[in-house]
Image (cartoon, rainbow over all chains, first blue to last red):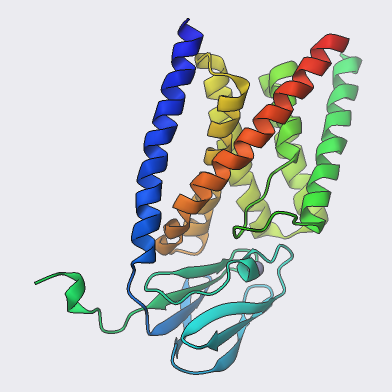
Length: 123
Length: 162
Ligand SMILES: [Zn+2]
């Protein structure tokens, strides 16, 4: 009996947390579009590039290099020297705060919004 | 004793084979970085059928060996964090609760992804990586469910033969 109760409680907790996570996922979709990307290696800012350009950027990571493409206001990792290619699978980013991570090469690409629009605050 | 060691050696090589296949053929990529973690089945079977200590040994050896065989230092750190948090959660839940193996495995799957995000946020010194957590939460549940179901059916077979 106690066994069954514990398993039921576990599933209920799981469902409640799932709902919270779902809420965060929906909020995520509503985020403001960014206008530039920040490229970090090892936690240090290496480069700032506008999202309005069309560009291919070679990022010198540690230890390997990656290629970032900026196109139509979005950024994605096109080539990567890491072995798992999780960074390439992460796809396109364009919203404020979105990131692409390549942990093996310690590269982080982050979208940022230069002029934080005030309508987000509602006033 | 020798029986235990040979069983562990067998499980270790099995988990290396699983890890190798997952590294070479990342089959399910509907979500960035989502992996089924087939090797976790082996760790789970060890946890339930052999013992806590042995499962931890197996997990550490697997991560370090696959790390040196197929990737670099930060990738090792990344998977160590996932493996430890996952096995930690499963060890505690197995010992102190009466949750089913499937539910223990689900908790382990979530903890695994939580550990990886934690390492990413520390190594990259950026908190924005946490935006990935909601997605990873669900993939953790999915992977944990599949592994839990497979693991418990393997355990049943093992018990039948011993
Ligand atoms: Zn990468």
